[in-house]
Image (cartoon, rainbow, N blue to C red; front, side, top):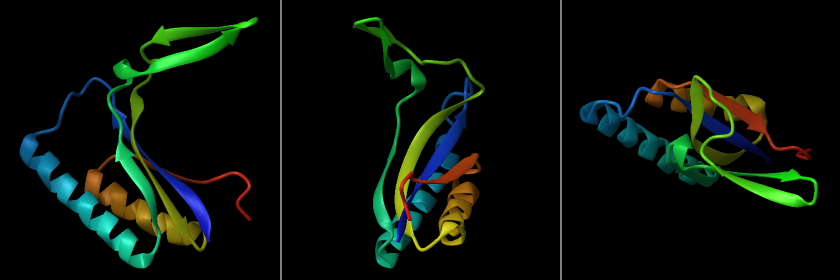
Length: 116
């Protein structure tokens, strides 16, 4: 079984969704997590704080500089991740489709490097 990263991208600058809509999304995400656990495919998943909470570290010569805030400005930002195991890309895409339907967000499914 390979491991896959399912990334959920949120639009920047739109604030929090309507509480009723968000509650429905969270119920669907919890149902997907339960199904992943039952299928033996759940590894890890969690939402992220907004990009303004990020701290970026980069090297400049022998020093490591620390900067508050996001690394890049963009129209979307990484809002959450889930790591799953799946037999192949088609199986991973099945879970990605469920997340896309549940959240209405762009979802990226990507295998980890070195996975056979």
